[in-house]
Length: 105
Image 1 (cartoon, rainbow, N blue to C red):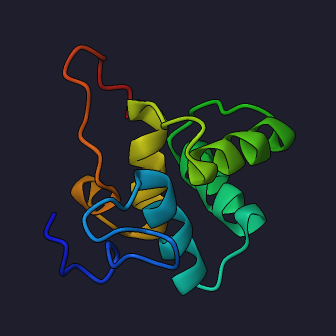
Image 2 (cartoon, helix red, strand yellow; image 1 turned 120 degrees about the horizontal axis):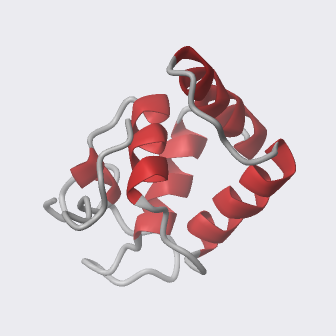
């Protein structure tokens, strides 16, 4: 991802080229004018259509918060759900898939 990408443009307190995946996730969500709750709802709809199970909404809220704050990084399963929900490519989040993790989606 180039630093000229609108998703990767640094915000206040962020140095050029050092934008975290969590910051990109948050910025992308906010550009859609979505709350974390809306993002969770979108993820749940995708999971339901595919007959996949997700944690409780409360657990998802904590997970999204941790991802956005940079305390955790989403696993492959959640990376793909996030990207589908937000309509972006995995590379737009500044993340790659872990080739050692099986594809569940």
